[in-house]
Length: 135
Image (cartoon, rainbow, N blue to C red):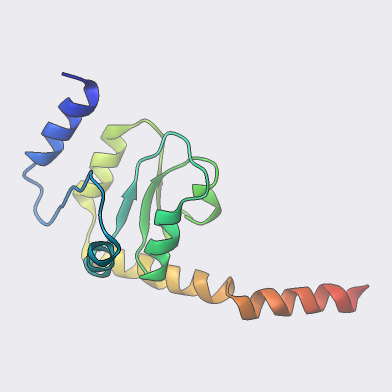
């Protein structure tokens, strides 16, 4: 049995309440439902390129628990839009998931909304206009 299967079996038999594990393809319709009801999205990457999953999570104002890897740290601001953990540290990930609360998730979701407001098309246009005027 591979290390993946051992961890997968351990995660599926976990007694953590209100925790779901999905390790297969999910349709767009199913994804919308999952993101809409999620308190957070967990992205335990060891390396990452820009993540479409992170973008979709933010679309639904869902905070992210992610590994502190390049590209994810561009959007996951520790303690504001999500929580960052060391990459390759399953114990740290488990600890964060274990102590997560709805209140903490709501606070981080509000941070996601503030981040989106500060990084929307209007703010980009305003910044570009300011740069052009400065020349």
